[in-house]
Image 1 (cartoon, rainbow, N blue to C red):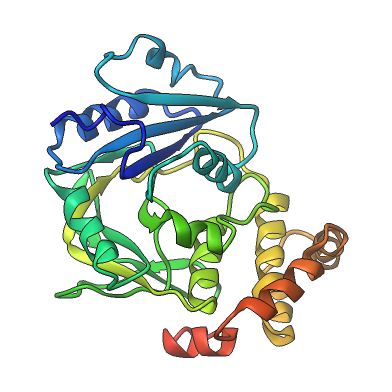
Image 2: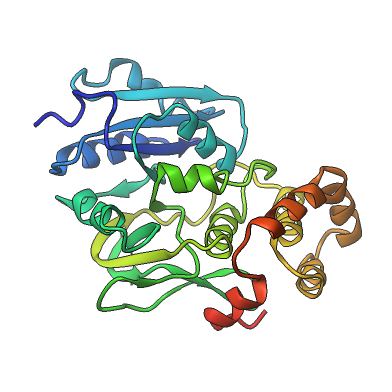
Length: 296
Protein backbone atom coordinates (compact mmCIF):
# COMPACT_ATOMS: atom_id res chain seq x y z
CA UNK A 1 0.00 0.00 0.00
CA UNK A 2 1.30 3.43 -0.91
CA UNK A 3 0.37 5.77 1.98
CA UNK A 4 0.61 8.83 -0.26
CA UNK A 5 -1.75 7.86 -3.05
CA UNK A 6 -4.87 9.48 -1.55
CA UNK A 7 -4.96 13.18 -0.79
CA UNK A 8 -7.95 12.58 1.48
CA UNK A 9 -5.69 10.68 3.85
CA UNK A 10 -6.65 9.42 7.28
CA UNK A 11 -3.84 11.37 8.96
CA UNK A 12 -1.93 14.55 8.34
CA UNK A 13 1.44 15.16 9.94
CA UNK A 14 2.44 18.74 10.72
CA UNK A 15 6.04 19.66 11.24
CA UNK A 16 6.65 23.29 12.21
CA UNK A 17 10.29 23.95 11.37
CA UNK A 18 12.67 26.82 11.95
CA UNK A 19 16.45 26.57 11.45
CA UNK A 20 16.42 22.78 11.87
CA UNK A 21 19.50 22.02 9.78
CA UNK A 22 19.43 18.37 8.70
CA UNK A 23 16.72 17.47 11.20
CA UNK A 24 13.80 17.90 8.81
CA UNK A 25 15.31 15.49 6.28
CA UNK A 26 16.26 13.00 9.00
CA UNK A 27 12.77 13.09 10.47
CA UNK A 28 11.11 12.54 7.10
CA UNK A 29 13.52 9.75 6.19
CA UNK A 30 12.72 8.01 9.48
CA UNK A 31 8.97 8.46 9.03
CA UNK A 32 8.97 7.16 5.46
CA UNK A 33 11.12 4.16 6.37
CA UNK A 34 8.73 3.08 9.13
CA UNK A 35 5.90 0.76 8.13
CA UNK A 36 2.23 1.67 8.54
CA UNK A 37 -1.13 0.55 7.21
CA UNK A 38 -2.57 4.04 7.69
CA UNK A 39 -2.75 6.49 4.83
CA UNK A 40 -1.24 9.87 5.56
CA UNK A 41 0.22 13.03 4.07
CA UNK A 42 2.75 15.53 5.36
CA UNK A 43 2.57 19.28 5.78
CA UNK A 44 5.70 21.17 6.78
CA UNK A 45 5.46 24.80 7.83
CA UNK A 46 8.83 26.49 7.42
CA UNK A 47 8.34 29.40 9.81
CA UNK A 48 10.91 31.88 8.56
CA UNK A 49 14.04 29.70 8.59
CA UNK A 50 17.30 31.35 7.64
CA UNK A 51 19.35 28.16 7.24
CA UNK A 52 17.56 26.64 4.22
CA UNK A 53 16.55 23.56 6.23
CA UNK A 54 13.53 22.90 4.00
CA UNK A 55 15.04 23.76 0.63
CA UNK A 56 15.74 20.09 -0.11
CA UNK A 57 11.99 19.47 -0.40
CA UNK A 58 11.97 20.95 -3.89
CA UNK A 59 13.80 17.83 -5.11
CA UNK A 60 12.80 15.31 -2.45
CA UNK A 61 11.70 11.87 -3.69
CA UNK A 62 8.51 12.15 -5.77
CA UNK A 63 6.93 9.11 -4.15
CA UNK A 64 6.55 11.10 -0.94
CA UNK A 65 3.71 13.61 -0.81
CA UNK A 66 4.98 16.55 1.25
CA UNK A 67 3.33 19.96 1.16
CA UNK A 68 5.63 22.83 2.10
CA UNK A 69 4.24 26.11 3.42
CA UNK A 70 6.62 29.01 4.01
CA UNK A 71 5.86 31.80 6.48
CA UNK A 72 7.81 34.76 7.82
CA UNK A 73 7.72 33.92 11.52
CA UNK A 74 4.20 33.45 12.88
CA UNK A 75 5.23 31.37 15.89
CA UNK A 76 4.90 27.75 16.93
CA UNK A 77 1.18 27.76 17.76
CA UNK A 78 0.06 29.57 14.62
CA UNK A 79 2.38 27.53 12.40
CA UNK A 80 0.55 24.43 13.61
CA UNK A 81 -2.83 26.07 13.10
CA UNK A 82 -1.83 27.07 9.58
CA UNK A 83 -0.87 23.51 8.74
CA UNK A 84 -4.21 22.28 10.05
CA UNK A 85 -6.08 24.70 7.77
CA UNK A 86 -4.56 22.95 4.73
CA UNK A 87 -5.49 19.43 5.85
CA UNK A 88 -8.28 17.11 4.71
CA UNK A 89 -7.56 14.11 6.94
CA UNK A 90 -9.65 13.11 9.95
CA UNK A 91 -6.73 12.85 12.39
CA UNK A 92 -3.96 15.37 12.96
CA UNK A 93 -0.47 14.47 14.14
CA UNK A 94 1.63 17.39 15.36
CA UNK A 95 5.34 16.57 15.51
CA UNK A 96 8.62 18.33 16.10
CA UNK A 97 11.01 18.29 13.17
CA UNK A 98 13.60 16.21 15.06
CA UNK A 99 12.03 12.79 15.70
CA UNK A 100 12.71 9.14 14.88
CA UNK A 101 9.95 6.55 14.46
CA UNK A 102 9.41 2.79 14.74
CA UNK A 103 7.25 0.49 12.63
CA UNK A 104 3.48 0.67 13.16
CA UNK A 105 3.71 3.46 15.74
CA UNK A 106 1.01 5.46 14.00
CA UNK A 107 -1.34 2.48 13.76
CA UNK A 108 -1.06 1.78 17.48
CA UNK A 109 -1.42 5.43 18.46
CA UNK A 110 -4.55 6.01 16.39
CA UNK A 111 -6.38 2.91 17.61
CA UNK A 112 -7.65 4.35 20.95
CA UNK A 113 -8.94 7.45 19.13
CA UNK A 114 -10.82 5.37 16.59
CA UNK A 115 -12.27 3.26 19.41
CA UNK A 116 -13.42 6.36 21.30
CA UNK A 117 -11.32 5.52 24.36
CA UNK A 118 -9.76 8.99 24.50
CA UNK A 119 -9.87 12.33 22.68
CA UNK A 120 -6.20 13.23 22.23
CA UNK A 121 -3.12 11.10 22.70
CA UNK A 122 0.67 11.09 22.77
CA UNK A 123 3.27 8.32 22.69
CA UNK A 124 6.07 7.80 25.17
CA UNK A 125 8.94 10.08 24.16
CA UNK A 126 12.55 9.00 24.59
CA UNK A 127 15.79 10.93 24.30
CA UNK A 128 17.42 9.98 20.99
CA UNK A 129 20.84 10.39 22.64
CA UNK A 130 19.81 8.30 25.66
CA UNK A 131 16.91 6.01 24.68
CA UNK A 132 16.48 4.62 28.20
CA UNK A 133 15.42 8.11 29.32
CA UNK A 134 11.70 8.08 28.57
CA UNK A 135 8.84 10.39 29.48
CA UNK A 136 5.21 9.30 29.55
CA UNK A 137 3.24 12.48 29.01
CA UNK A 138 3.78 15.52 31.17
CA UNK A 139 2.53 17.32 34.25
CA UNK A 140 3.32 20.76 35.70
CA UNK A 141 5.61 21.89 38.47
CA UNK A 142 4.58 24.67 40.92
CA UNK A 143 6.19 27.21 38.56
CA UNK A 144 4.19 25.85 35.59
CA UNK A 145 7.27 24.30 34.01
CA UNK A 146 6.55 20.89 32.48
CA UNK A 147 7.76 17.72 34.15
CA UNK A 148 7.74 14.25 32.61
CA UNK A 149 5.46 11.57 34.04
CA UNK A 150 6.89 8.28 35.19
CA UNK A 151 6.11 5.06 33.33
CA UNK A 152 2.57 3.73 33.25
CA UNK A 153 1.71 0.15 32.30
CA UNK A 154 -1.29 1.00 30.15
CA UNK A 155 -2.96 4.00 28.56
CA UNK A 156 -3.47 6.67 31.21
CA UNK A 157 -4.47 10.29 31.62
CA UNK A 158 -1.86 13.01 31.27
CA UNK A 159 -2.16 16.62 32.37
CA UNK A 160 -0.14 17.86 29.41
CA UNK A 161 0.35 16.45 25.92
CA UNK A 162 3.95 17.08 24.80
CA UNK A 163 3.87 19.07 21.59
CA UNK A 164 6.84 17.06 20.35
CA UNK A 165 4.36 14.43 19.22
CA UNK A 166 0.61 14.29 19.73
CA UNK A 167 -2.44 13.09 17.81
CA UNK A 168 -5.92 14.60 17.89
CA UNK A 169 -9.04 14.06 15.77
CA UNK A 170 -9.81 16.89 13.37
CA UNK A 171 -13.27 17.45 14.87
CA UNK A 172 -11.86 17.80 18.39
CA UNK A 173 -9.11 20.15 17.24
CA UNK A 174 -11.57 22.44 15.51
CA UNK A 175 -14.08 22.26 18.36
CA UNK A 176 -11.53 23.80 20.75
CA UNK A 177 -10.33 26.26 18.08
CA UNK A 178 -6.91 24.65 17.84
CA UNK A 179 -3.78 26.12 19.35
CA UNK A 180 -3.97 29.57 20.92
CA UNK A 181 -4.05 32.00 18.01
CA UNK A 182 -2.97 34.97 20.12
CA UNK A 183 0.36 33.50 21.23
CA UNK A 184 3.68 35.02 20.27
CA UNK A 185 6.77 33.16 18.99
CA UNK A 186 7.10 30.30 21.47
CA UNK A 187 6.01 29.20 24.91
CA UNK A 188 3.09 27.44 26.65
CA UNK A 189 1.34 26.34 23.45
CA UNK A 190 1.29 22.66 24.46
CA UNK A 191 0.24 23.43 28.04
CA UNK A 192 -2.57 25.76 26.95
CA UNK A 193 -3.90 23.27 24.40
CA UNK A 194 -3.95 20.49 27.00
CA UNK A 195 -5.63 22.60 29.67
CA UNK A 196 -8.24 23.73 27.16
CA UNK A 197 -8.95 20.15 26.14
CA UNK A 198 -9.47 19.05 29.73
CA UNK A 199 -11.57 22.06 30.74
CA UNK A 200 -13.78 21.65 27.68
CA UNK A 201 -14.49 18.06 28.71
CA UNK A 202 -12.04 16.16 26.52
CA UNK A 203 -9.56 13.55 27.72
CA UNK A 204 -5.80 13.57 27.08
CA UNK A 205 -3.91 10.29 27.29
CA UNK A 206 -0.48 8.75 26.88
CA UNK A 207 0.04 5.33 25.29
CA UNK A 208 3.19 3.86 26.89
CA UNK A 209 3.67 0.96 24.49
CA UNK A 210 4.30 3.39 21.61
CA UNK A 211 7.62 5.20 21.71
CA UNK A 212 9.21 7.80 19.49
CA UNK A 213 12.74 9.17 19.81
CA UNK A 214 13.18 12.92 20.22
CA UNK A 215 16.32 15.01 19.79
CA UNK A 216 16.52 17.18 22.91
CA UNK A 217 18.61 20.25 22.14
CA UNK A 218 20.48 22.37 24.67
CA UNK A 219 19.31 25.60 23.07
CA UNK A 220 16.83 26.86 20.49
CA UNK A 221 18.16 27.44 16.95
CA UNK A 222 16.50 30.86 16.89
CA UNK A 223 16.30 33.73 19.40
CA UNK A 224 13.54 33.74 22.00
CA UNK A 225 12.08 36.79 23.70
CA UNK A 226 11.13 36.76 27.38
CA UNK A 227 8.50 39.33 26.45
CA UNK A 228 6.80 36.76 24.25
CA UNK A 229 7.10 33.91 26.73
CA UNK A 230 5.64 35.98 29.56
CA UNK A 231 2.94 37.32 27.26
CA UNK A 232 1.90 33.75 26.44
CA UNK A 233 1.89 32.85 30.14
CA UNK A 234 -0.43 35.74 31.02
CA UNK A 235 -2.66 35.15 28.01
CA UNK A 236 -3.07 31.52 29.08
CA UNK A 237 -3.80 32.61 32.65
CA UNK A 238 -6.48 35.11 31.63
CA UNK A 239 -8.03 32.58 29.25
CA UNK A 240 -8.40 29.78 31.80
CA UNK A 241 -7.45 30.63 35.41
CA UNK A 242 -9.22 32.23 38.35
CA UNK A 243 -7.96 35.53 39.75
CA UNK A 244 -5.80 33.90 42.41
CA UNK A 245 -3.90 31.90 39.79
CA UNK A 246 -3.65 34.93 37.51
CA UNK A 247 -1.90 36.71 40.38
CA UNK A 248 0.41 33.72 40.87
CA UNK A 249 1.33 33.84 37.19
CA UNK A 250 2.27 37.51 37.53
CA UNK A 251 4.66 36.52 40.31
CA UNK A 252 6.39 34.09 37.93
CA UNK A 253 7.52 37.05 35.82
CA UNK A 254 10.95 37.83 37.22
CA UNK A 255 12.90 40.00 34.78
CA UNK A 256 10.06 42.00 33.22
CA UNK A 257 7.39 44.29 34.60
CA UNK A 258 4.38 41.99 35.17
CA UNK A 259 1.94 44.90 35.09
CA UNK A 260 3.25 45.92 31.69
CA UNK A 261 2.90 42.37 30.37
CA UNK A 262 -0.60 42.16 31.80
CA UNK A 263 -1.58 45.46 30.22
CA UNK A 264 -0.55 44.32 26.76
CA UNK A 265 -2.44 41.04 27.15
CA UNK A 266 -5.59 42.84 28.25
CA UNK A 267 -5.35 45.29 25.36
CA UNK A 268 -5.40 42.44 22.87
CA UNK A 269 -8.86 41.07 23.59
CA UNK A 270 -8.17 38.24 26.00
CA UNK A 271 -11.16 39.11 28.21
CA UNK A 272 -13.56 38.41 25.35
CA UNK A 273 -11.87 35.04 24.86
CA UNK A 274 -12.03 34.37 28.61
CA UNK A 275 -15.77 35.04 28.62
CA UNK A 276 -16.32 32.65 25.71
CA UNK A 277 -14.16 29.95 27.28
CA UNK A 278 -15.92 30.15 30.65
CA UNK A 279 -19.21 29.46 28.88
CA UNK A 280 -17.74 26.53 26.96
CA UNK A 281 -15.91 24.64 29.64
CA UNK A 282 -17.17 21.64 31.58
CA UNK A 283 -14.62 21.88 34.40
CA UNK A 284 -12.86 24.81 36.04
CA UNK A 285 -9.16 25.29 36.74
CA UNK A 286 -9.59 24.18 40.37
CA UNK A 287 -10.73 20.80 39.05
CA UNK A 288 -7.75 20.57 36.69
CA UNK A 289 -5.05 21.33 39.24
CA UNK A 290 -6.69 19.12 41.88
CA UNK A 291 -7.20 16.21 39.48
CA UNK A 292 -3.53 16.13 38.52
CA UNK A 293 -2.22 17.07 41.98
CA UNK A 294 -0.44 20.17 40.69
CA UNK A 295 0.36 22.57 43.59
CA UNK A 296 -0.44 25.86 41.90
